[in-house]
Length: 191
Length: 191
View 1: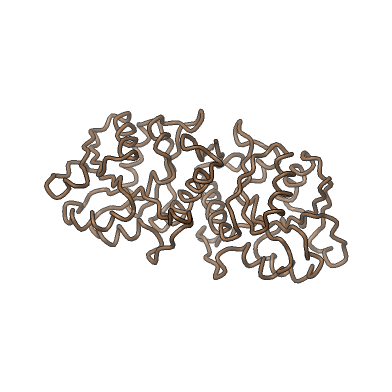
View 2: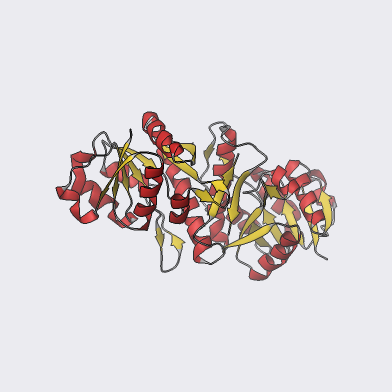
């Protein structure tokens, strides 16, 4: 059975708890404030925190992340102007990979609104979870558990492709932030 | 009645002819090779050509594009490696706007596969046409005719947002190019 640790306790954390529980995985939730004093039990560690906390968390956890599959779900934007922020590393996921060099970093879930992760659906379609990362085995393990939740998983390629996932995540946030779509649907992908 | 000129005669041109005909618009098709000798009748000029032809076409048409709504539908990638090409201007649409400074340039249709423009559907949903551009009146005129075709139109904002549309177009091409989706569906957007 796959074990998942979810860092953070906000709405994305709660939605991912629902998804991974539906997949039959063991789920540990670690509050951001308890990180230093808590053993990380999961083979997969999902950082369900804002972008601004990523590097600090990687520093706090340090070697506890070595060998783990670490999933970055963040979107990076200036919420005052609702414009994207271009990161020198190319993506938030690339920044995280630099801060946790012995972790197997994946980008995923940033293109799925919380409500859809909870329900598993966009309208009548299964949610589409787009993933990028350099470690093929890590993507396989991640893909199997997410597929078990009922979601469709798509592999975008290496971690370089996190830039496109972050662009798509931003686009969906922009559409909701401008009231052109709601927060309970969004993009679906049909084969 | 809105009049449309479509430059190019390939599969995207044919699909857009179907879409605009469905919308009740008058459609003129101009072959790329006949541009210099043909009067451009449309208020909206859709350049249904590869990215590599955009600047040359803008040069050939010159002042014939002044005041026109000009729609860039291109995606920019290295087809040998299937990787995105980063343009110094930020997007193909920005390059076109620089080459046709008196045109009202919009980015649209690059996130819709030809088959879906022809049918008007992704699976059972109406197609979603995402548009970006700096001229609000141009987007309104464009939005009205595309909506009349049965499509749902979403406004991403100014032409700066063409970068996100090109990223999304690339992502969809990558998914089809790696056989994870077919060429007759793709992304749908649900409110």
